[in-house]
Every structure is written in structure tokens, then in C-alpha cells.
Image 1: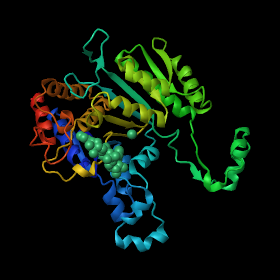
Image 2 (image 1 turned 45 degrees about the vertical axis):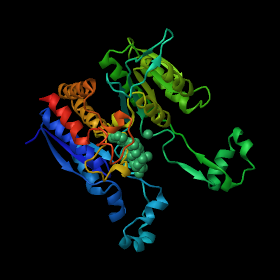
Image 3 (image 1 turned 90 degrees about the vertical axis):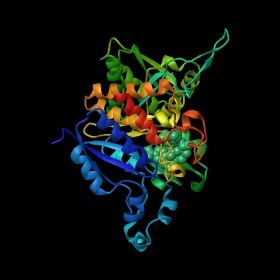
Image 4 (image 1 turned 60 degrees about the vertical axis):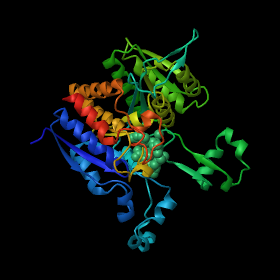
Length: 399
Ligand code: NAI
Ligand code: MG
């Protein structure tokens, strides 16, 4: 029997192209696992009225470890229009509502820690560079991991346009609501930002633990407590409390606006950043852009019991039908390496990262994004490697 069981969810579009590539790499490093396919995404929605079927939930609950490709998601109205005709008459009775399965998965399984490493590989032509005062350029080594709270904050989904009377009354009990008292309901939208202390403690602790493991001098809590006093305030206060358990590691504090400016000036100063859901989402995309963008951005959604690893990119439908496939499999392969870290197979994960680093350093094999070509059927004839050729090059380094 294999030592590990991994639930594989390729999902839609290019998810189906990149996920199998990561399995080839896992096999090459001798990862002893059985893989169980699970359905997720757009097809499931159109055929069953549910993008995250119960059978997939059951498999994740049972095996606790998942690799996910990407899904296509659309606003609810557009989604309803694409339901299989047979389901449409049932729509009224069953009330099918489209929810993004990845957001559902995060909330349902309490995958509250989102870890997004943004690490530059030497030789990647997409790396951030900076002009030197004395002339010329330098290319600082970026090694930043964003810890994003994944289940709360601005993304809890508690929101209204035209809030019901009881909500409106509750809002009106706050002195600051006076300014909006005369706004008609249909002209007023409100989204609730919720932060809880236990979740704040968990995300900050995860960031400190990672800093400890990597030997970093400090971590940065990035919020906006001077303005968003209650929720950002609770994040920052909790970070200060947790910091007491890590006497050797400093806690720095930045505001989200200033942080985005600093990451354009000296991104190498930040190794670990912890933030709430929306700010963390923004920060991790911003940092990912400095180390190559979507083709390189891996992530882990980590809960107490269950963990799912995925590239941060989506299903890129416009490239999904290309043969050979052209998208960069590195984000997916790095996500698989993160999965290995998570189950304490660090040595295998390091081998994978070293092999990727060697391919990039050599610079002979590059997917279209690494050549700044526009993606499309012509990319290959313009010299870009296919998805499969990139994986082959990585496998070559693992031999
Ligand atoms: P996307 O990430 O799918 O693609 C945006 C663009 O980024 C692509 O057109 C391509 O130029 C580039 N790109 C993405 N992955 C790449 C890769 N591995 N290698 C090279 N280039 C890559 O985002 P988009 O177009 O906004 O959304 C498409 C669909 O994906 C939508 O239905 C959206 O809802 C969904 N989505 C799903 C996510 C998930 O599954 N976690 C995350 C983001 C979007
Ligand atoms: Mg994002």
C-alpha cells in the first residue's frame, strides 16, 4: 500500500494540463502515493448544479490531502444560464446557486491558513530589477512568503445591497451611520469584515513558525489599524500577543498602502508577511508579480485537518484547448512541492525546487510567459517550450 493518498482535482481548463505534470514530477522524486481523482468545477456545476459535489467532499474528508488545478467560475446569473437543460426546470424547486468551489472548500474545511511563497529564481527574465544610483541595474533576491487569513475578513460574504430593516437599524445604532441615514436602501451596499481572535492567532502563529523554521529575523503584520480600527486593530493586537512566544523574532508593522509602495522599492526586505484575507490576497498577487507572475505563484490552503495545494492562477480558458499545451506548469509543480513540505517530505520538495531552479538558471527551456510572448498557438513556433517540454526539462534535472 502507498504511504500517502492524495485527492487530485484538476478542475477546468488548464488545470487539466498542469496537474498531471506535477504528478510526473512527484513520481520522479519517489513520492510514494496513491492518487484518487475527484470532480470539481464548471462541468460539475453544469451537469449537477453543484461545483463541489459531495463525493469530492467525502474524499477530502477521508484522505485529508488534496492537489487542485484550477476552476472556471462565473457570476451566479451567467452560471444559471449554463446549467444543463434538464436541470433548469428543477432550478425553481432546488434553488441552485453558483458558489465558487474553492471558496466553499476553504470555508467548509476550515482551510484558514493560506501560504503563498513568492521566491525569485536566478535567471528568470521576469524577475524584478531596480535601477542603481551609480548606473546599471540590480536584481535583489526576493524570498517573501505571504500568510493570508483565508476564511474571514472581507471575504466572509456577509453583505447586502439594500440591507433589510433589522440590519439597517443595527447600522443606524452607530454614530458614524448618520452620514448615510438618508441614503435610500437600493442605493446603499454594505459588506461586513469579520476578524476573530482564534483565527488571527492561528495565521500569525503560522507566520512565526515559518520564520523560525527558515531562521528569519522578523515578520511583518500588514494591516491598516489607524483607520480600520476594530478588525485591523484586532489583527495587530493579536500579532503582538503571539510575538511574545517568539522572543528571538521581531514583529514589524506596516500599513497596506505603504507596504505596496515599499514592495516596489525594496521587496527583498520582507521575508514573511501576515495579513487578513483581502489585504493578503492583494499582497500575494503583488509579490508574485515580482518573481514571474501566475506561472510561478504556488499556494497552500492549510487547515487543522485538511490541506489543499494549488497554483494561484485560474483555468485560463483561452489556452485550454491548445495542443500542445503552452502554459507554465511551474506554479503547479511548486504547489506539489509545498504539499511535500506539509507532510514532512522536505527533502523531496527541495529536490524539486532545485531542479526547477537549475532549468531556469540554464535558460534553455522557457514557456511563452517567460519569453514575454503573447500566449497562443504561435508561441511554440516562436521558440517557447510547451507545458510538457518544461516538465521534461525539470525531470531531466532530477535524473
Ligand atoms: P487566469 O489565471 O485563468 O488567467 C489569466 C491569464 O494569466 C491567462 O490568460 C494567461 O495569460 C496567464 N496565465 C495563467 N496561468 C498561467 C500559466 N500557468 N502559465 C502561463 N500563463 C498563465 O485568470 P482569468 O483569465 O481571470 O480567469 C479565468 C477563469 O479562471 C475564470 O473563470 C476565473 O473565475 C477562474 N479563476 C480560478 C481560480 C482558481 O481556480 N483558483 C483563480 C483565478 C481565476
Ligand atoms: Mg487573487
